[in-house]
Structures are given as C-alpha cells and as structure tokens.
Image (cartoon, rainbow, N blue to C red; front, side):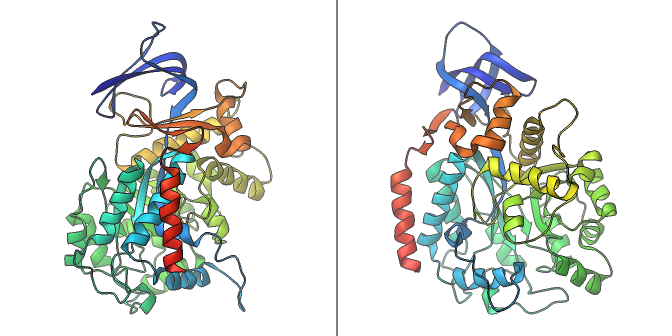
Length: 439
C-alpha cells in the first residue's frame, strides 16, 4: 500500500529542505521530491532520519541501576560482569521478551529506529538448550516486531572462558554453542530485518572458530567486542604475541561489513588499520563511561577517514542524543577544548549525527539511516523550538535530549506521538510483571 507524507522541514542527504513529499510503498521510500502542492499527510516540525543503535544487550535493561554499589574491592568491568552473570540466571523466555520490548520501545522514544541486538542469552539456566534451540532468539525477534523497531539479529558465538582455551565458568553456560548449534541459530528468521554473526570476543572463541564463522557466513554483518579493557589487551598479547585488533585483522578479512565494538584501547597502528579497512567502530559512550572502560581516540580515527556509529550497549540509559553528547564531552575532557569532533564553521551536532547515521546504517547491513529512495521510511520528528537548520540538531543533542522528540514514524506510520509509544502502557505492564517474576 502506497502512502505520502508531506514533511514541513526535513534533513535529506543533500541538506535541509522545506515542503518535502515522500512517497512510501510497503514501508520503503520510493520517491523524495520538493513540492508545495499540499498533497500527502502533513508532518509539522523538523524531520530527520531515525538513528541506528548498533549495539544492544536487551536483557541488561532490567539491570539498570542495580550495580551502582561498590564492593570490597575496586569495581571494574570484571566485577560488573560477575554481577551480570548472577542476574542472567533468573531470566526465562517470557522475561526476556518483556524486557526486550520495553528496551526497544524506549529506544524508539529516544530517537533510535533500528537496533543491532548482540544476543548471547541462548540456553536454559543449567546450560541445556531449549526444545527449540532458537527459543531466545525468537523472543528477541518477537519483541522487536511487537514495538516496530528495525532489527539486525546478531546471535553470539561463545566457546570458551578466556584466551588459551580457558574453560567457561558456570556463569557463561547459557551463552555457549558448538559450531553446529551456532549454525542452527543462524537459521533464525528475522522478518523485515536481517541476521549477522557475532563472535563475542577474541577471548571467547578460538582463532579457528573465528575464521570458520567469517567464512561460513561470508557477506553477512559481522560484529565483535574488541579491545574494551586493558586487561583484555594484555591477555591477548600474552597468549598470541599480538594486540587484539591486529590479531583479528590478521585472522579474518575485516572489511565494510564488520563492526568492531568499543575498540577503546586501540593503538595508532590499529586505528589506521580499521580506518583503511572501512570497518565501523561501534562506540557506546554511556556504557563505556558507566563501566570505566576509557576513551577511544576519535579525532585520530576521523582524521584518517574512520567510520563510527553509536550503541546503547548495557542500556543503563537509553538516549540517542545522550550517546552523541557523551561522545563529544568525553573528548572535550581529555583534550581540554570545545567542539573537538566538529569542523571549522560547521555544527558539531550535525557532524556527529551525519557520521552516526552513516556508520550505524553500514553496521546494520540494511537500507536505513536516510530519507532517500530505497530506505526504510523511519523518521524522527523534532520540535525545533524556534531553531533552524543545524541548530535544531545542536539543540536536540546538547540541550533538549529526549524532550525534543515529537513523534517517530516506522515504515511511514507513526509509532510514537507526543513522546510516547502507542503501546507504552501494555509494554510497561508486561515488563513490571517480568520484574516481579525475577525478583
């Protein structure tokens, strides 16, 4: 079914335009033209493409706020991970679906219209597969479908507990797969979306497993956690006499379909290699700050033509604006000047937004992230509050945050209006029921 939307003001790939008529057929943009003939459903406000969220662990939304208490030793990513392992033991399929639906709804309300779900909660608490080995993957698909968000499903390949074939811990048993069982997970259908591979990290798979997955599923999106922690880098060097990103790129052909998540502690050589490969670096500034990971050298990467997108990772806070603002503010703190990621005489917010749209769309492996023919008709409508052109983006990203979002369109149909998802009450009710079950 074809429909038309008359966008009052819109940001197109070629720049800001007024009176834009978008024709949509079965959720896909077919034509974009400037007109003043008044046809089409009028969308007032400032319309931009929805931002892709390139890294999410949906179940962790129910953990938000539960780990902000210091233990008897210095807290770090590694102590947080143990708390996550204890939490994950409680979750069943119904719980996962309810939590994921809430997280995806909140992403839509916050300006994300598609998500790459790095999904590693596969099995029952004792490690045995469900009767349908893809049960938990299907629940992620169902959650995304119920709220309307675009989905790239990334079943995680997890084989070992650490470098050198370290045995997995009990806390990791729900994540583990053989090559054969992983191949079955990769048969999961994602209607309207796509599926890709996700070797969890170099510490969680052997190099042979990594090469097998890359070869077997060549051409699909490929995501991996890498160089997030200094200990990870040290352990990799001890086991393989190579730094993680160098080791990855020496083992498989890293190209445009790869998303290297975090890459926080990449050195200058690795930064240059990632930029040259045209891979996307998946930055998750809020989570990286929450876990005390460190800061990626974004200016050096961008100076070499590097590509990045943003993700909300642990979902401790869900906000497209806050991810980009935290990204810029982190760089301001270490470089001690303003507008670090901006360019001369250009809006910093606009540059951040453009880069995150392009990198996120590339990592999703889908036609998203632009108001252009062939793309999904996913839009975010902002209240400009008297601002014009790029200043609207600066206002949203650096000041207004989620309050600037008036509505969100998915496949050309409004799913969020006045800042609220159309099914918010039902989704929240299911989520609260799940919290009671796992308390």
